[in-house]
Image (tube, rainbow, N blue to C red):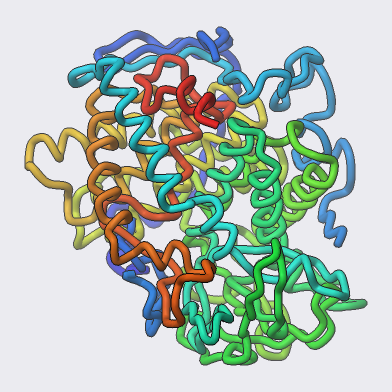
Length: 583
C-alpha cells in the first residue's frame, strides 16, 4: 500500500502533541436533529423487517500479487470463557436477556423467520435523491442479478475455488478454505491443480471476507445446507490464520499470519478430485513486506510455513465480515455454531493482544522470536485519529466497549483533507479506511453501543454522498476511487444500516449490469466450469474479474435482504420477496 503520502499528511496536519484518542462520551440517548440529509432517533424500533482488479492495497514495497497471472486479474479459544469482556461467547454473543449485548430479543428465536428480521436498534433515515425505481424496474434488475448468480454458478464456483486443507484428509486434520492470490489453476489429463507461486499470497482477508458474507446471506435466504457448509469452510479459514501461528507445547501470544502453507495434498471434497500444490511456498521468496517462517510442529498441520508481518491492510474487511456473522449465528447447525464461536474467540483474543501491544501487530521473525515490526504496515496510526475506526473495531470485539476511543463520525481530519486527492491518499488507503469505518459500525451495533453506531453511520452516509456528488459534478469518479470500490461501499453500507437513496441504487444497478456483460462473455464460460468433464485441459483463471464489480462481491447484495442490520427505510436494491421465492 502507498503509505508515505498518507503518513506525511497525517504528520503535517497535526501538532506534535496530538493524541491517538480522546475521552469517550457516555453512550446514552442521542438527540439527533432533523436536517436536509436525514434524521435519526435512538432507542426506537426499526420499521421492519479500492482497489482495482488485482490491487489488494498491498503494503509498502509488497510483491502482493506480483507475478500472479490471474490478477486480471482445534480449540483455540483465546478468551477466558463465558462472561469475559470479549463478546465471543456461545450464543448470540451476549450473556443473556436484558443485557446490553447484541441480539437480545427477549427470548424470541431470532431465526424463527428466515431470513431473520432486521434488528437495527434505532430509526435512521436520509432524504431520497434521484428518481425512485418502479416496481417493474426493480423486478427486472432482481431477475438479472439472480441470472448472473445462476449463469456463473457463483456459489458452486466459489466452493470449488476456496481451498486450504481438505475435509477429505484421511488423517482428519483441521479443514478450512480461503480465497487466494498468488495461485494459478491448471487442468492436465482431466486433473485440476491449484498451483501456488513463490511470491505467495497477501491480504487474503480482502477477498475471503465478502465471499464469506455472501455465503452467510445466501444461507439465511435459501436455507441451503451447501451454503451453510461454504460459510463454515471460510469461518474455519479465518480461524486458520491464527491457528497456523501456534507451536506445540509453546505458549505464545495470539498471532495472525498473512497466509500459511502446509504440505501439498490431494483433495476429494464434494466428489471433486484436485491437487493443492504448496511446494513453491515451503519456503517461497521473501520480500520487503514479509517473510516465510517455519513452524515444524504446528498442532494442526505439522510442518508449516506461514508468512509473517500480518499487515493492517485488510483487517477492516475481515472484522466487518466477522461482525456480519452475527446474522448467521444462532441460525446454523451445532457444528457451524462451534466454528463461529471459535472464530469469535480467536479474534477477540487477537484484538486484546494488539491493544495490549499499543496497537502494534506482533509476529515471528525467522527464529520464531516474537517482535513488533517497525514498519507502518504493523502499526495502527492514531495521530489525529487517522485510523481510529480500525482500532475501535478491535476494541469492541476484544473488550466489548470503546474504552477512551471517540472516532466521532468515522472520517478523521487527515482523511477529510485528502478525500479526493490521489497524491495524498491512494485508492488502497481509501478502501482500508472505509472498511475500518464499516467494521466499527458493525461492532458498535453488535455490542449495543447505539449512540456510537449512529454517529459512525451518519459519517458512512456522508462518504456515499461525497462520492456520488463528485461523480455527478465531474462525470467521473475521483482518481483514488475505482468503480468497483464504490459498488462495494454502497452495498456494504446498506448491510450495516445506511438507507440507500434512489441515486445510489440506480448507480449500483448500472455497474452490475456492465459487470454482467464482462462475466458472461462467452470466453469465460470454461473458467466458471473448469471441473466439468467437457472442459478441455488448459490454464484457467482462478478469479475472473471486471472493472465494474469484483467477483468477490457477487453475494453482498443479498445482505440487503438478510443482514440483521439492514435498514427498512432504504430504497430497495433487490426485490427481496422475489429473491426468497426464486428457489
